Amino acid sequence: MVDFHRNVHCLMGLPIDAISLPEAARALDQARQSGTRCFFSTPNLNFVIASQSNVRFRDSVSLSDLSLADGMPLVWVAKLLGVPVKGRVSGANLFEFLRKQSSSLWNVFFFGGPKGTGQEACLAIGGKEAAMHPSGYIYPGFVGVEEMSRPDLIDCINASNSDMLVVSLGAAKGQEWICQNLDKLHTPVVAHLGAVINFVAGKVQRAPVWMQRTGLEWLWRIKEERSLLGRYAQDGLAFLGLLVTQVIPLAIFQRWRAPSEAHYERASIRHLQGSHGKATALGGAWRMANLAPLRTEFSRLERLHGDIYLDLAEVSGIDSAFIGLLLLLEMALHQQGRSLRLARVSRSLVRQFRLSGASHLVQR
Image (cartoon, one colour):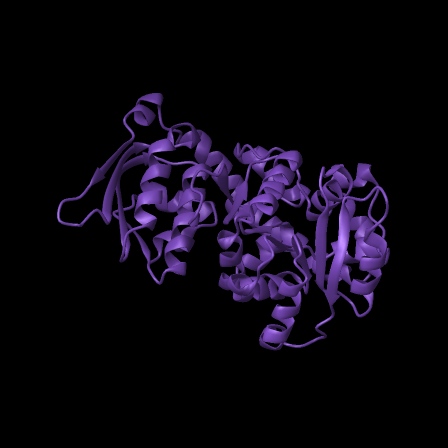
């Protein structure tokens, strides 16, 4: 079941949880202790750009139990749009936080990475003061996702009794592999952390902290891995396009079309007659502060059968948290073979969905 009580927001089309690094670490530790599955993603600028054209990649982030802003451009855009992201939470920093500050031992399995790197990471990860222990590694080679999903490979991972599975296959391929095999894996915490295996093995050095905090880590990464230059150049140009066509227009739109407080006070939920509770009409304006009834409603809708219809004819305003919840509901229904359909959406809201990178929600 999806946790609709997450503090999640839509940022350039992707759901992003507004939590700090220590809060993320606690969430992972709770998942490990309880044995509850936590698939977490760490979207950066490359994730944002790739998700514009790769629907399956975009959906893999919406499928995540936790989605963290791994990249200063995301943090900067969040501040411009008033999205309450608490700062950058990179996959590498989160991994190191658990490695050095966790109160209990983590058993970690590495899947992927360059040949020999998984073994070197296993040799380097331990130590008397480390809170991590290597439980194994697999180098699957340069093969397709289906070949990497062979039962013997999955059985090997499960037999290791790992607490965390670190996948390193390239972002799109890694996310696809996780989504395809998540139901078969017994490991409670799973994530694609592409560069972590290289950092741990000592193959690539991390940028100085001041470069990480100022958004200049990409320069250091190019120095360490020249092959990244082309990708960073393409992503940078695409990001400029998003700023001009979506981000800046959305910032202006939000300031000019902000609903009054009275609209938020009139926020309402009404079940339409004859729909068996599967058609809901919303009214008024919705934002993070008044979403509690909607979180409960979405949890109810997830448990029903058949497609879900939301009538937005009387909705006068929404924010990034409202759209973030819709992204979670859409993916929860999709996993059940169901659809989310938004009806009677005003032109103003359609524009806001488009500028937020979530136009697919209103194009059905």
